[in-house]
Every structure is written in structure tokens, then in C-alpha cells.
Length: 140
Image 1 (cartoon, rainbow, N blue to C red):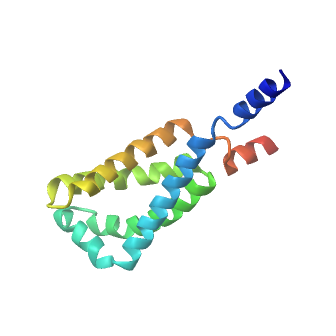
Image 2 (cartoon, rainbow, N blue to C red):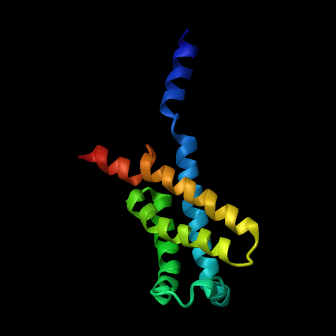
């Protein structure tokens, strides 16, 4: 009976671990994407060709790299997660739009769509139990 109680207590204490691991994975993915865009700026310019004539395209081009880098770090640590996710959503909607309007691979479109869904989930769910936000909230 003691073993069942201890296992139940352990399970209740670690219920949110898979969701927190998903959050960390999302943050690492966005950070790596920001690094890839920073290393290969010509690829980023090629991605923005379909919307090059639209208003604000140059601003969006300069917004992508810092938003991915800073947002990815914030999401990994669980600090201001909802704000970091809000900054990613316009980029992901733009990535889906670019995926539909250009001759890019469908893999990039699927990855952008899945990333958007995960971001919307964390916009609603928040940063989770194993995060800096949760730690700071418990310190009050």
C-alpha cells in the first residue's frame, strides 16, 4: 500500500513534465531556426520574395531573427512564455502564407503549421509547472 501511495504521489508531482518538455523543445526549435536564418540570410531573403512588394516586408524581415532567438530562449526557460508565443504567431502565420504562395517544399509548410498549433496551445496553457514563471509566482 505504501508503494502505491508513493507511486501515485510521484505521478501527481510529474504530471506536467511532458508538456514542459514540449515547451522546451519548441523553444529550442525556434532558437535553432533563428540561428539558421542568421547564418543564411540569402535563404531568408528568398523566403520573403513573394511578399517583397507588400508594405512592411522589410520590417518583417528584420523582425524574424531577433524574435526567434529571444522568443526561443524565453520559451525554453518558461519566462514570459505567453508574450514570447504572441511574438511568434505573426511570423508563423506569415510562414504559412509564404508556404502557400511560393514553390517551397510542403515539409516547411507542415512544420510551420504544427509549430503554430503548439504556439497556440502554449498561448492558452501558459508556461507550465516547471518554469521560471511558476517559480516566481510561488515566491510571492
